[in-house]
Length: 443
Image (cartoon, rainbow, N blue to C red; front, side):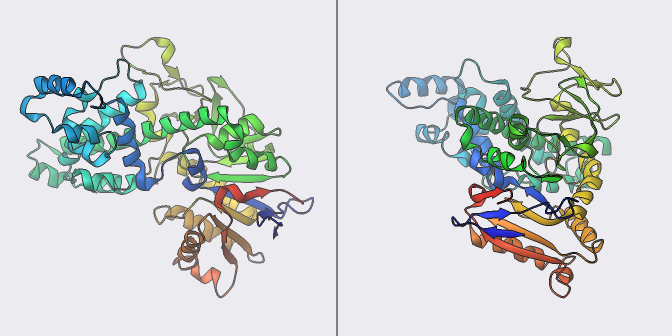
């Protein structure tokens, strides 16, 4: 059931009845975290380059001639014009065109390790893309979705690379593909990790600015609630950590430890279940046993050869060494390749959540075609509920955006027969001032 209050906000009356048979499933996409400053896929590379450029020399002020002369002494004829150098910090495409001099432009005495790793990954990326026959042109690259670039890299034919690049063998070609994929994944991870830490600091300074906290407060009045979040960020998770006073758990992740302490997670008894099918920035997944290790408020640490033993971890479940975020990136998050371990781990949990739900509220999730596995799950769950109708509300601050997502759903090859003739799925587009205009609970 749903009703509008006098302010035009959406009120979902969920879990009506003592048997919990009328439940609501909440789905959060990237748009739900946009109010905290997180980039969308469409501008992630642009935001990432802008982040790196914060440590570049500004080439402004009274000493600009002196600084430019010193740069010419290092770069010689390769020195860009001074007006280009003055625009690099504000023009990501121009910055990529001069990526060969990035190390020389760095002027900070102490660069944060995450920015340093991000800079190194960007510097290596153009050659890595060239090695797999992917066009590294800056204008094209800055406007590319990360998932599209990763898909293009993975589509490279190793046999063709051996011929076109004069490589020794298929192993070398496969190594080039893996290297390009790793660099894009690192850029994706370090960029989101920076914005995650910035959002955490912003929330500490102004708690009411994190709208997830409003949702979490309302969830305290609900029973048997389930949440699917496709976001890597931990802002919803941390809002639950600080503000949810009842029991909650990650569902389907097989959590073995929290901050290194072994846990026995009884997901079935949790009053709120959170499913993150694309992974999370606070998770490490052991590649040996596929059990998840959760690290709350954990900052990046260099691990592996040359670091202290205290900075390395072992899987609590199988005792295999976990060498750190970088080496485990492909198994702790899905950036975004849509076929990784975590999706398989959470598939049954997502199906259970969809089967239980009569109301689905989607905030900031566009139901992209790349998430075809989720379309399959939604379709199967609807067929398994022969006598029940499911209502799916698409919430967006822009009604046109909500309507476009609704049309994508009702015209999808799997769902269109369930939306129109049988009306098993009713999809409603709602203009509710986006995330800010939503609250839940009984009235």
